[in-house]
Image (cartoon, rainbow, N blue to C red; front, side, top):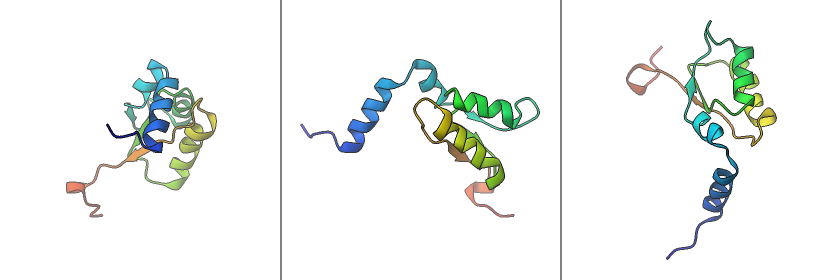
Length: 92
């Protein structure tokens, strides 16, 4: 059998440290909106309950959210950012 790589060992160790709530949080893709303003969203991110952001396109929007994930959450896991584009290609 092949030996796990350094990256695989890191991921395995990280997964073992994560709570169930943090694992579920990594599956959540959230968008900023009236029902979840940026300040409340940053708290959810810092608590490890959000793993990805949807349709936040400006650095001014992204940076404080990424800081909440990396600097304020227990494990410092960065956010994943996703965008809704026409046919997977930005056309505007």
